[in-house]
Image (cartoon, rainbow, N blue to C red):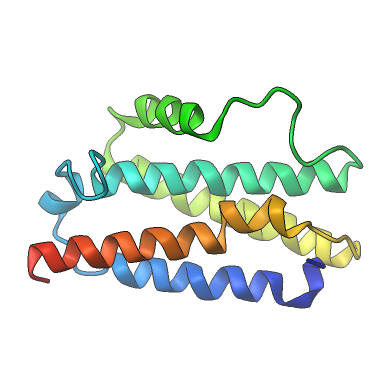
Length: 149
């Protein structure tokens, strides 16, 4: 998808929907395991932050004329487990900060790609961003329903 053909707007629309799904979840439920599988909402936020950062890195590699994915990248499930373990002891504020910082880095990289007229392949960006946000937005809605919120 060309970075100038609505990609940023699509990402931002689904990002806002994801953030709206988070609104009103009390902190004790944000920190409680079991929101999404074994993960807490905090774990989920760290997971999303990681993949936004990965999406930004992929766009930067495209801008540098390199392949979007690095050869030999571990399978996504191993990466998820590794990144969840890395963030397990982080305070919620640090996870929120990373979430917003990586999202901003993604938007800046995409804006640079747009200005450079670069095409970002859908398979490089969708699963890390708007499709990812949709899936986890739905997870959060299901969690809220279980909480009666």
